[in-house]
Amino acid sequence: MKERDEKPLFVRGPSLGARMLLLATASLALMVLDYRNNHLQSIRNALSVVVYPIRVAVDLPFSATRWLKIVMEPLTYRSRIRTGIRI
Image 1 (tube, one colour):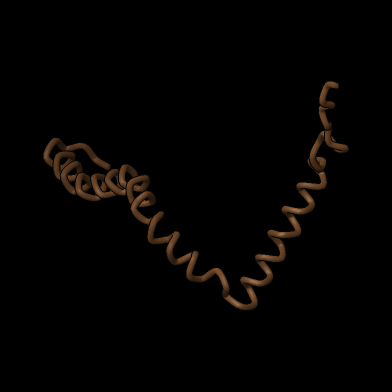
Image 2: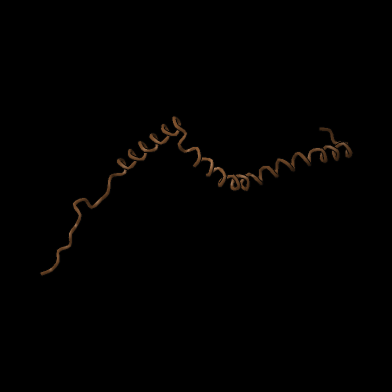
C-alpha cells in the first residue's frame, strides 16, 4: 500500500487583514504600556547608543558644509571689499 500524503486542513495562513489587525493591536498595546510604565526605556537607551554613530556619519556632510560656509563668509566678504564689489 502507498502511504497517503497528509495535507493540512488550512493550506494558507491568516489573511493580510488579520495580520495587520494583530500587529496594530500589539503595537498599540506596547505603546500604551510603555507610556504608562516606561518598560522600554532601557531598550531605547541601548538603541540610541548604537544608532548615534550612524546619525553622526550621516549628518557629517551637512555639518561640514555649514561649517565651511561660516568659515568662508568673512573671507569672501573681505575679497569683495578689496575688489570694490558692493553687497
